[in-house]
Image 1 (cartoon, one colour):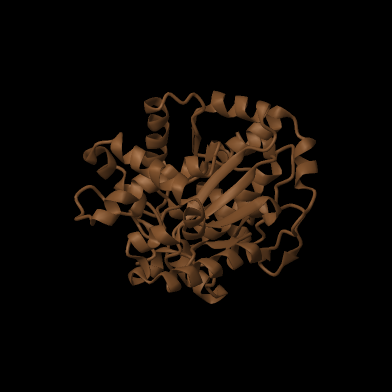
Image 2 (tube, one colour; image 1 turned 120 degrees about the horizontal axis):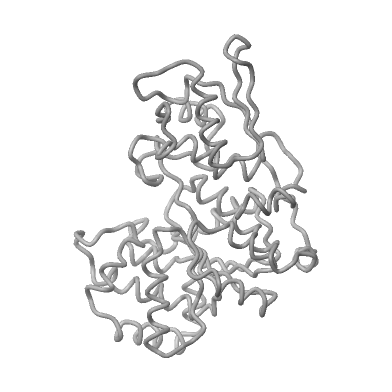
Length: 360
């Protein structure tokens, strides 16, 4: 879906000036005008390209047809350093959504971070981190003219009479086991010993979707269960217009078997403030198994970071090894071809990316 659109239209970051190794997208006041030039199918393709999964595609198409400026909800816990999945991928996705005419509400879940005992539950530290992360997105090129950064503590306090009855109703209509199954959204599992506050967390996150009047839930695949809970709640209250779930891909960690980046393991993640030398070391040590596409973190980075940002990838090789290989479109076939290009000599055991010369 993304390839078909991007083959005919420039990326949301294409008009941004290059500064060193990062692209800074200039804030534009004409994103609405840009969206109005797109057909319904183009807007659908652009929005749909953000998600690895969409529930449901037919509902998304109808929404875009009837509503020029749908509201997309995203959110994060201010809980520490920002890795590139959160920084670069979110910037790419938000810019795609706003280019398609969407308004993006980013929920800065400071109270949620406190409930989840992040930063020792110190709300002042949590808010300071939240402010810092917003500045990183701006520096990374997020087009913020159609983005609203909303602090959960401020918004809930200002409309408490609307928010808390909604949370209570969601809690009342669900069993404890059903809520516990959603604990994945907090980075927990069903076997963890949860505090009463953490049990309340999924009910609050589900309520956020309706509180923010979101048409689209644009969160990671790890948040899928609570988004489905919101759709099920619509059935309970006989609401026809359900929030559409648009779940983006979770970028894996750099080490073998890591399904997603871990802030507790610095070697598994590339952080937005990492120096170039640090990035080079991490990439050179990254797991890169020969002849295997599935679960290869290096190829995941190329697919979800390098291509959407730079639109090309080049493998630097000596002439005797076949010379440089530049790939400018990534399909299933090209993915395999890229791996073959990297492996210009045979390996029998898993190797690291440091054996290859990589360049964007």
